[in-house]
Length: 348
Image (cartoon, rainbow, N blue to C red; front, side, top):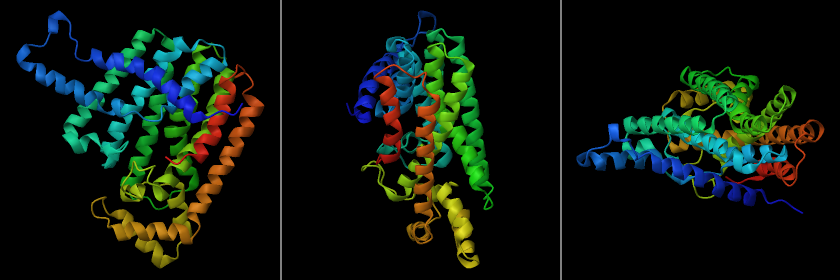
């Protein structure tokens, strides 16, 4: 029977959202010793509103779905994994909040970013509120092993973000493909794929060898996921959710495609590209971004990214078949395998 991974995501989203919603509602409840005086209730309601904003927009719920599917594929009851999956999703929402601030992004999930609605200070505070909520869910989860893995996932993700921001702010023009893959391993390989799968496996009592194999698989599929994401940023409106084409160019983000273009341009065009990248988001013009996109097309950088993504997808499939036989329970195993094609073929 053919698996529709979109339907899988939708079903898992409903399960996990129900858990997250309960925690979001608890934000407005304070114990008697620190109860909110009636005159400040409107302020407390506003606080709850902005903290709940990104979670309520929802996303694909890929990460919590991978937690649930991996646990199920190793015979661990899905219901007992929902709280871990909920914490994983909430982590995404606060990270995206802070990420949008750091990049001064315009939109998130089809709506203005939180800092563009309420200002940077309140947006940072809302992200802090979500991170606090994530740790509360993990405390209630009562699993030191899961808590420890969350620390390692987030610690490596923050390192990847440090590298990305620093190299962008330093206007590095000498980055290699290896450098970009280092960021991708940290921010996507571990955080988006390997980490969620390891969480599900930890719940199921996985061995160190099994957990190491999941990390390696996560690297391959994470490369694939992020290159696809960056290609979509350059070529797609994310199914109508994104108004600005080439957002990564406005941000000066060092992607596989940009690094490929840098090594292919002649001296004159290379100087022009560097001058564009030195500008802030607001200083870059639409025509300048369009020129960079056109150069990527002319010099085959978009095609190169596509080929690289397909290479990693092929490697991920082979790795899954050869090394992840311990993910054996159906239908979860087939659903996980289908995820590979879904990530390479998606339109947003």
